[in-house]
Image (cartoon, rainbow, N blue to C red; front, side, top):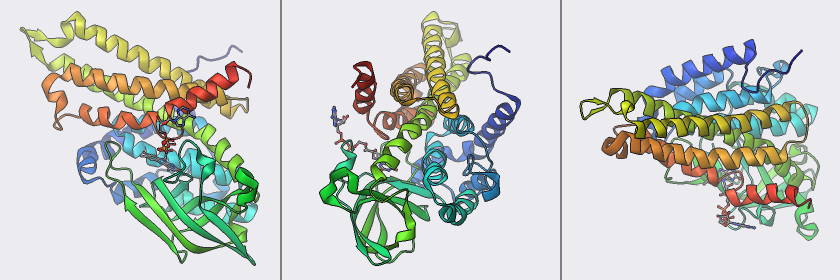
Length: 383
Ligand SMILES: Cc1cc2nc3c(=O)[nH]c(=O)nc-3n(C[C@H](O)[C@H](O)[C@H](O)COP(=O)(O)OP(=O)(O)OC[C@H]3O[C@@H](n4cnc5c(N)ncnc54)[C@H](O)[C@@H]3O)c2cc1C
């Protein structure tokens, strides 16, 4: 049997992608502008995403999930991002990060307790970054002090996606600072834990409907049973999760790049200047051709990395390349789209200015562009 082309979808993948695309266009689409203005994601849409199984794509069926592949998560993120990159990151963090950590590192008890909730009604968040530790993530200063059968967590987390809506937080804290990064441990923290508080919500340039907040932990008691993965192995949980997660960010950026192209195509066909549609001008055609080629090239990188991950072959460099490139071309496609629209592209009456703002985050979160290049260079130089 010959190997199918990378972008060829099997029946399950095709049906799933089509249904997510329909949901995104029909249900999310009409609210994108208002949610961006309000900097808030609608609760009813979140509920619909749970009902459609979009918040538990890889969660095994025995825990109420879809029992799907990582590649299906990537398809969902891409399809939603074509319409709204902010909605896409909510689904992205839940599936490629939070659910993934529990599926991979959770004990049978932790899986039985948390996966059914994450698949049905509970948003999750991943809390690694702090004010003083971003790219240098393991310099984190949140501390966990053992106290009998529990740990007491104290510190502050910053930039936590989904924090406003979440019920469960994966919080990284150092339980043995003398051991350096080998003291870092991942804890499952529930929202109603005493001493735990969701702090200031950031007022952002883009993906405004996705919440990004500070977390405050003040002597927060967390049962020892909520250590996720081994004590002192949190750095491994974080690195390996983010290695996968950034393929999801690549998918978000591919969807955004495609959305920018789709809007440009339809506008170029109907906007007339000099007595004809601007799509008739070669200058505009060349812009569209470049945008389509960039989106396709990025898609190939993302699909390849995702399929490598599902095939359990090493994918770290490919994932870094996928995220690096997709975030670059998302920005350039969104910029070109604003220009294809001309003056109206610069206003909030049309959707492309939002894509231009949304694109910027792709080069920052889950490892900045520089950090992706360091990963790729390390592999090139055999370090
Ligand atoms: C909207 C949003 C959502 C986020 N969501 C989450 C989340 O859910 N969970 C979470 O834990 N974090 C989250 N983050 C945090 C995000 O991962 C960090 O912002 C990111 O890793 C960069 O860290 P920093 O902001 O501290 O920048 P810094 O690390 O201070 O970087 C500043 C600049 O210095 C460069 N730089 C730093 N070190 C090097 C180096 N060694 N070599 C070359 N250049 C370098 C960087 O590339 C960057 O250009 C989010 C951030 C944002 C803005």
